[in-house]
Length: 295
Ligand code: ADP
Image 1 (cartoon, rainbow, N blue to C red):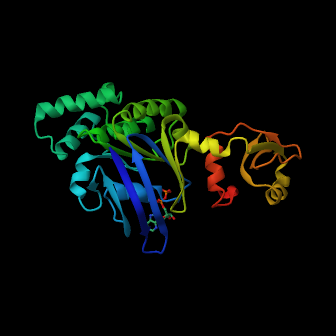
Image 2: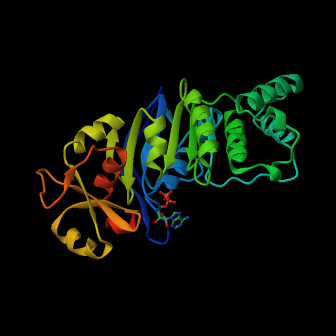
Image 3: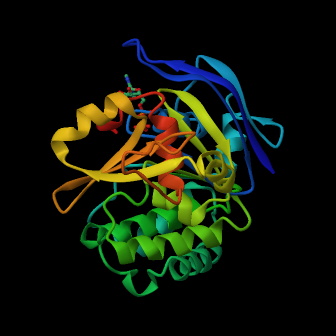
């Protein structure tokens, strides 16, 4: 199973080119789509989910033309959008039953056992009678996954799913996603590097509507390993360092700035070699396009 995106381009009526000739090959498993806010991730997700059209380019899922044969993709798709409305007074069980009915599962007892199985799967069975409006952020997201799983999709899209979750909720959500990723294509769109690091076997970095990198996270790491150096400086020195070095990221630690730079050679001047991580890969690529201070 494979999702192939070729030369996808989209310009909004206001002139913003959200996708600029995007090509990606997405195999079975968890695929992380990483990019800063405004990179074009949601536009790409909505286009794959057949919710909006592109100007140019094609998307195929196992030979099915996603942009033309929308109905057959919708039957194979589970989508967890960034913001999804929940009917606050309806309980989880009733809502899932309703969604299953809308997705064409007419048989009542079949629906009942499906809804039960899904509620167990996302660990919401004991909360099934609670109104959705009372759910925490993590419960909402797990409910979102349950509704996306109705109909046994072969392609699942989750858009910025961990934003706003606390660490334990995030962990629970990670476990759930990685289970699902074992036998479907799961596209995880996020600006949180840790999400991709934890979950994804394949990834892409996009920025300003363009693909800057695609491959395995470890391939990305190999590109920057041995080239990352770190130094702690005073905040007031930042501009000067920016002029002299390729600063890829800065972090404020106890009032001082920890600076990471990318360099083919040891930059000297008190810099220490650092072990590269996926954040360095991300910032290395993103800093080619946008000023790191704005990341
Ligand atoms: P991301 O999901 O990575 O944050 P988006 O796909 O939401 O990125 O946005 C990409 C770019 O397209 C941004 O500059 C955004 O402002 C713009 N954009 C998104 N949706 C619309 C729209 N409906 N009309 C006009 N511009 C839009």
